[in-house]
Image (cartoon, rainbow, N blue to C red):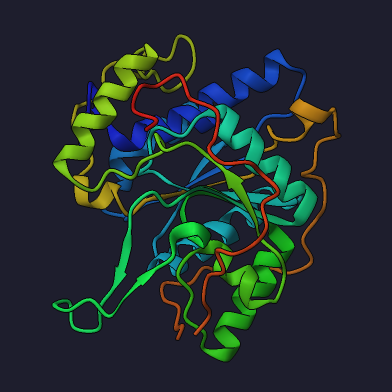
Amino acid sequence: LTLRSCPVLHYSLHLFLEKIPAYCAANGLTPPAQVVLVLDPKYQPEYQYIVDAYGGKLAFANPGVERQGSVENGLNKLVELADNCEFIAVHDSARPLVTIPEILDVVTDAQAVGAAVLGVPCKATIKESDDGITVQRTIPRARLWEVHTPQVVKVEALLRGFAKVEREGLEVTDDVSIIEALGEPVKLTLGEYTNLKITTPEDMDVATAILSDRGEEEIVLGGAGTGVSGGGRGTGRGGGSIDGDAASEVDLSSSSGAGGAAAYGKANPFSQTPKQRMDEKSYNSMSGARMNDGYDTGRTYPAPPTPSKWHE
């Protein structure tokens, strides 16, 4: 799917490979050590030119049958290439509008707690139904949160979590659910309502309006002088774009270190070597953990307004 002038996926690549490193350089911080793009092998040749342009900072991992298999494969690739990383930030590329301040906040919270996830309090009224026809009950929304990405977790904890999930045949719904299955806390980091997931044509219209409202410039991948733009290919290379359905399934796994150090002057948190390594898997069998949205965030709602008129 093309958002404005380039594929939706390129916004996440640009964020982790260009915008966050530039922010870190300007603020004396260590940028993400590695970005792993989980992508179907049949589309990888189309993106090889971008991988080549970043000199080892970007690498592919193959997807699993389900989301958690994809995340595990991305995690294993990250450990293989950057085994001194303490945290992993897992991001769904179908969310192209996440901001650097949101990432700073969620990484800071993960540093303090061990795991954190971006989210916003639910605004909609939620009804429960057994048959999809009759309302069974109305679920109080005061305790309900809509969870976004990135989700930031200690690498060591996520490795232990995947081992438990496979050993006990657990079914988990997202990345931090694995940490919940370990009985460890997950911090809810208050995000922005503009961090929407592209799932319908109407979402594309809203995303376009938000980008225009922010005054976002054209996406350029590959760094200065590479000639790699968001909508095409590098100089002398053929054109084309990734299929929209495939793009919506892609996760970005990154050892993003832009958080707490920026706000609180902490040292780079990504210096601990994980003790466990696992081979890449093409499939994971999982079957009962649940997500707990009731964790006390210690934050105030409603959130302060964002620059976008689409906040509410």
